[in-house]
Length: 263
Length: 263
Image: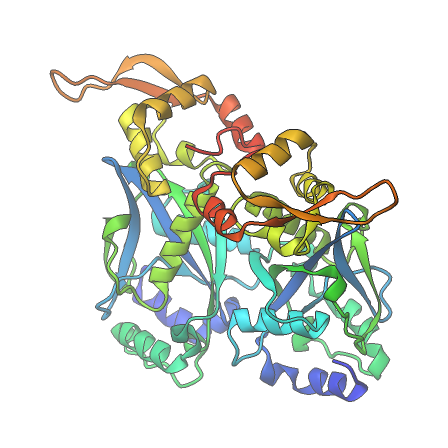
């Protein structure tokens, strides 16, 4: 929502357009400079950061809602998106009073105070999706109720995100870790051509463990998942590592039959 | 809901007690006679079978709701339960007319016709949970609106379950397959002591492929995940296979660090 009028319209008429008691929260991951980063936003009046998210239209499917929200936030379509968990347990989700206070601080920007029982302050379950983006392609859309955004290394996420957003991001990361041998996560996070240190560092970050680099390279090449190219990346006068790319056919097959299931 | 009065109360006052637009559907799996089975029910007036399910109380957490629903259906508590996906896309979920007709057929048993816009006929997303039960311990609770139940081999599930329940059960099975090396699925489906053919057949069923039995046995024993006992199962005069049990410590560690990630 980019304008004051859109926000007012949302507050007063949103209940007609969106399903109550439900939201989507997004863990948007990008990989850059050997770091796995996630996008955080800070709503107006809030001290703590949060994950980007949105609501589900009454006439759109759940998957359409997730893609729409991601497109609105990043201006990207066709993203690799996976639902990972629905959150409905935390005390902050069960406790409407705190939600109402948080929302009122944000919506004060349009001069609105949400009445008790307003649909935006009711108990809301959240369906979590993770998205893998090309970090350099993302254009974070300015939004009227968002004061600030940032990309943070996943290791540097503050302990005090709003509500249960720390739990959501942790679950997203655990899911990436569980999925990395079953979903084209490496393919969707890396650029088309990458160096060995880049792919090695990505897998170490997601798996949260040190992996022997020579065995890693050997396994990926032996299985034909990646291939070395005749190009080199110019980093400096004495550093020109070879570039690699995924062999999509072998990679897809390995994901399908589980042949790369461990390092 | 076991009585006519409970059903009437639910129809007329359920909206105060349960969250609208949400339900939980359960894929309840049990393992018996070398078959992975699932529990299906047939609601009053319906031709097609469905998965058991229920609604989420306004004052209970999502996880509490899942456990409560499972306890109501099976009379078992402390079950191994995993959320696997939230369904909100299918045409049958988006198309309220068909839902209203289906519900009206069932609720006609208490002489009620749901008005248009009744909360039970509105678009409802479903949060899927799978439960792993000891087949012999389950006592399926008779319910007023359920005419029949059955345990079916997962390979024999009819193509025409209600709504998108075929999609839900397929997703549950795919999740079991993805989880079998990360969650104690074998442990929760098998009895405390089992024969090698039983555990072998279970893994073949879940992984949907043939596994060489000798290598399978060798890997499980070498990793110390199972141990052979000094007992034998009496099947017949010439058949007394040894019994095995899980070594929980090694098994948990293997699930944690992924050492058994393939067969």
